[in-house]
Length: 178
Image (cartoon, rainbow, N blue to C red; front, side, top):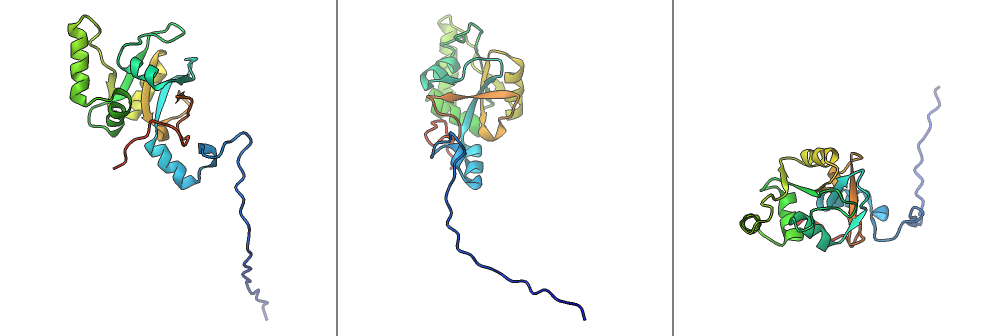
């Protein structure tokens, strides 16, 4: 006669304590549950630069100046080259709202006015996909772009804005997910 093992279910009450990785701060990406981390990765816009760019952080004012063409060189002397997704994309709409503070029509008028006044008429490079933005930033040493945090990989470097990294609770570049 074969011996049957009867499964036992043991219910234990466990106290759960959140343990943060060394150096992590509560309220940052390091202590975020996986489901929340995925939502953050979809909604936070990461400002990306070429990996060789020594810049690690910008203020929102500096970021705006770069994307408006008012600041045309990095602190280390290389020319800045902004890149965004094409009109109609949620990442671009968020950049218009959060960085420029303009509509698409206002942005077009701004760069036409700059051209008329003798400045550069070139706005940011427009690319169809997040992959295209990343590829452009990878290939152009002075490039800067914006993609969703979920799209960032090791080919580019995400920088801090106002001393907050994408994924931090206080990070300012968050897309409107309505």
